[in-house]
Image (cartoon, rainbow, N blue to C red; front, side, top):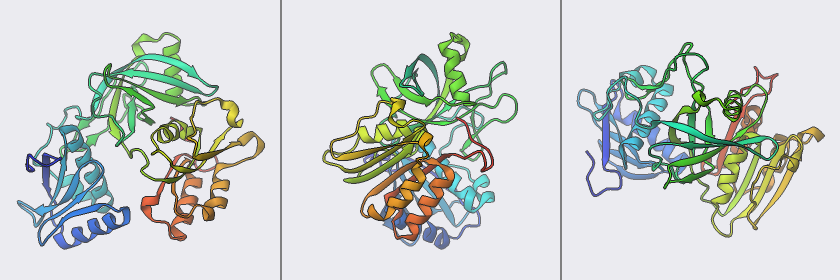
Length: 362
């Protein structure tokens, strides 16, 4: 266990079979430099790096040269940190990721500690193209400004639901087959810790499974009100004085949350794309230091094209972009080619155009 007087008293370690300490140290330090993480300790057999949600690092292994280490402020965040490390390892060394066994871990087959059942208590219309869903859980104390997203876990209709579980390597195992749930990522728009309720906004679009689920609740489907919540997850608020926030409807709730949380005196620009521009009537407050541009797809105006055109004027800003995946990739590649640092870019693609292998629905 980590020292009790640290901000991250919960610690776990897992051997990395066959992984040299020097090679893994170099990989972690390179990522830390790229993302501007703080290196707290870098020794002959110890490495500790601080992230937004806890510590990651390397230690001497028990039955291997190297062990991975994570530390967090509570058991839920410890599980999140372990899952993040395994996800990274799966990209680099899939066999090692599956072989990992953490010193502190939940029983395989149990519900993940960052999962809880919640009840949809209210669904209401919000503007012309959104629904606001209120969810009530047992304990939403982990939700704050450091990570503003979550997975909404919706079982299919008329099928015995199957829920996520903890795997042998300490990561989340998602069920497959007929009972597999739909698990899109959404943003916590508002939260009330006194009542353990949160509000999230759902973009209404044809074929959207969450749209259909929310509409069923409006129609009175009581047996569809119980769903799962996995989180918190993802990044938090923007810590920057100069920002560019560019989004289509899929990112409006996150953009609104970020704008609400900007530091006083922040400056920059907001670019929002909707089918008919500002007529979508989504409630979003623009701070006084930022200017806003609304784009209307119905008039041929496109978020991705404007973002690329304006990239050269945004030097020194932090860019937050949410939209089509191809547009996101082009913007990310152009920004990196122009010398932008990774810490200045939070660029996400939430859907694909139909001609690009089919549209994704949430």
